[in-house]
Length: 82
Image (cartoon, rainbow, N blue to C red; front, side, top):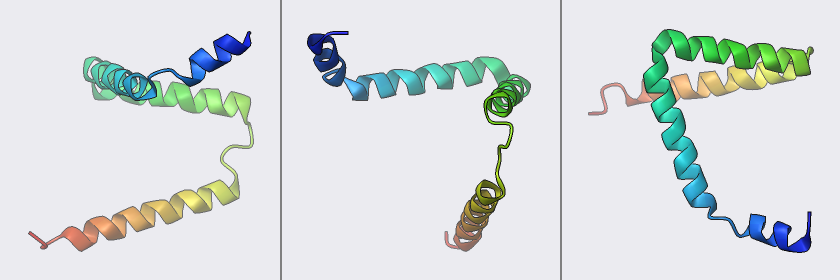
């Protein structure tokens, strides 16, 4: 890899790449349907477990629970606000 390669990489149109990635995943999820999306999620989970057998740690589980509680509370707070 050359200096010019690194510069070209850093100057990529990252916003366009993000948009293309979002479009690709949106289309993929639509074509997969619910069952396919759940299967893909399970494949990702199995991969993570193969790479990180200790996943999720108790700290990660605690963080995840805190996030779920916060989202649940935020959603509950929107009830009746319309």
